[in-house]
Length: 221
Image (spheres, rainbow, N blue to C red):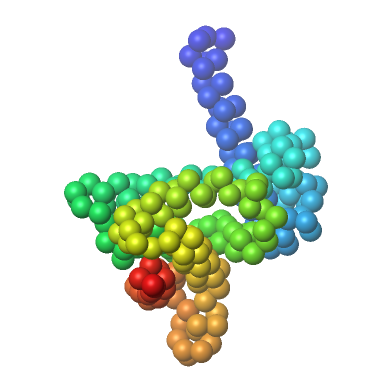
């Protein structure tokens, strides 16, 4: 076998391995979202992905490790966009306005969730489950908190007299509003009598709503 043929064969194996890994993570993401962590077995994930139990273990490890990996690939994409937008705001030369910070933090998730990708919809349902269960914070908080702290620092610069705990609380409530909106808009549609639309259709309303809370908290005596 020539060096070129061997290289092509190796590349093919790598690509097949990456495709299999994505299939395993996609299957786990869908099942964790639909059934919850406790009700989802590795055997069920293997069947959903069309692979053996050993393949799931190879690509994802134990179930606790697998769910973190599932979340991590989404968080990496979100964190990259959020950091880029924060850097753009800071490059303007003055402390970013509070509304711009809220926009920069919320909009990347709304954009991804509005693409129509069923896996991002599954992630939306999954993360909505996880944030309501405090047992997950020690395991996955490290994925989300570093960028959240960067935004909190910028918010503290915009509102230097605000207590850090108040801003942290307001940002946490802002995230909860964002996740709830993305995971389900059925009640909005039911109450308004209009089509639910995509998450991006609610961008301005969500930003205004969340900004109002953060602004009120940060100005409170």
